[in-house]
Image 1 (tube, rainbow, N blue to C red):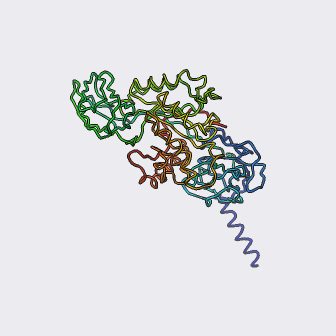
Image 2 (cartoon, one colour):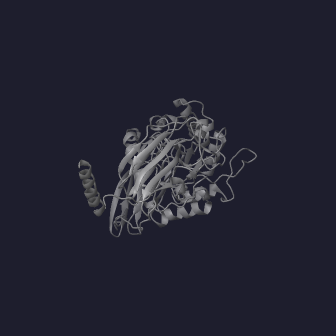
Image 3 (tube, helix red, strand yellow):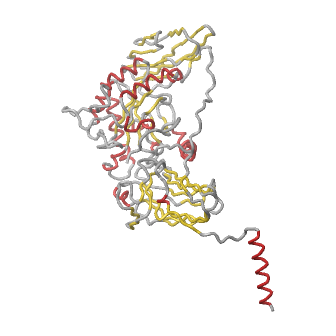
Length: 508
């Protein structure tokens, strides 16, 4: 009798549940992460590699081989659309064994369900066993897989997601989600017709070095600009609004600038500081990497210089046009000096072209034998390269860690500082001012020692990518830590501001 009642209750409950759709016997399917389209995923370096590491070798974590998986480089995000019909996500994660041949790596592996953090690993290093992930993703619309640089730089942060599987039910298979670019629109306020002097009211040079400053002014043209109290050795060109020359005496000079047009007038005091410190305000400008990658050319640099004038950037204090990787020839000259490749005709003339407009030109190299793009680096050629750049009229050097990984011995702070001290000492010996940008992605808390290594700026993180999470992590979380270390002549560099669509070709 009891058994009959129990069966009757079961049938009633079963009928109610099936009637309202609570029970479902839909088929459970699986999809591997490696089966998805990962071609457009952005990451710190190279591209997502499927079933191999970033060197095209078999995937391996702690000497365990894996046939199925992907290798990423921090910082990376993979967004997967779940259609609210996914059940579980499983994977093993760890740092690929080829990193163990180097000396540095640390990664947080994270999994987000919509905005919820479903999984965050401990800080993982090379030669550690893989960590297992097995989590419910029921009800979520989006799954985000993050390879995070653990807030200490991204060098050698090559993370593997192996045997990664999503189980789901229904007809819509989970797939990688790519954001549709939003239409371009401007939120910049309209410019005042009355003259306005823009930018920081301070500039610097060393005694005896060439000084160059374009007064950034906006308003209805023509604008008459007058400058008074210039120190001996400087002169003002009223046609170009450029102050140039050299000052032999160390000191701070208060210069008066006045501007007037048919709509009104304005004035400002500008401090010219002649001493031993450059970049008293954060350098503002453009870097070629996110636009062109290794496809940079002289024509594209000239077009950018012209764009600074055409679109008014130069009149708001934007000054530097920096050539990133991809300008070098395959070999040096017979006298060991660097030379440009066939995409450039003369970098010295290019610098002259920028200087004539009151703008400045930057260059790129590495303290290692090779740059990130496998071009010639400056290892053991620091003196000759710095002199070459000075002769060309270069105003800024981005010095990128890259292959120095093969040179460094140990993890001491002295070892991290060594290549940058060596180059900064050479730059200081020049009769030209070169703003020195240390680029090593924040290793060993570079913000704590960047000034002592001669840096005017230093990269605090891995490369930024065009996602909110990347910008939030770099701009807010990291710089909430590093901002006390920044000040005149010494600046945190959170990487390039991404404006518009990225068109560069990632390196493999």
